[in-house]
Image (cartoon, one colour):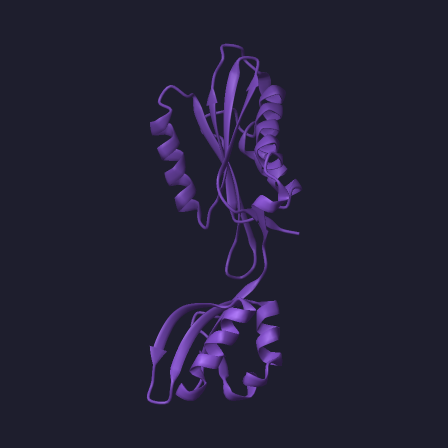
Length: 205
């Protein structure tokens, strides 16, 4: 089961006097992650490194992964963090770890254990109730008549569909909606299915 943290969470660990401030946060793109990295560098000007790893699901339902070692020896911070995220089946989130050097060099293996351990700590410190299960969604345009609009809107709320945009024609509303595959099946099984028209958005494959 792929899962995403509902809100950001912070944990601090220590390894041979080096402090590792780990932050787990939901994200939707790498631009936001880089911006958060810059924010953390500004908040912690005396820190030595702010490393990160992330996993995102794109519109084609492909998992996009990446990391930043931010000056640590190559492969000693980002990759072990990413490996921990993979192990815990995280998606659409990032872990950023701010390191304060404690004066004792950890070595390659020590750094990998420290960053991987900090990532594991911030993930495991959150209860399962603080994660949401990732479900595949699709965006569609729903059309119906004015007479059916109120009933259709109630049905969309019941199945958990989200209305992203509303437009009105002379025949009735065109509602751009996002919903899970389960919600789509429930909608199709409803008696109202015969009086609505569903079609892909222009951006859909």
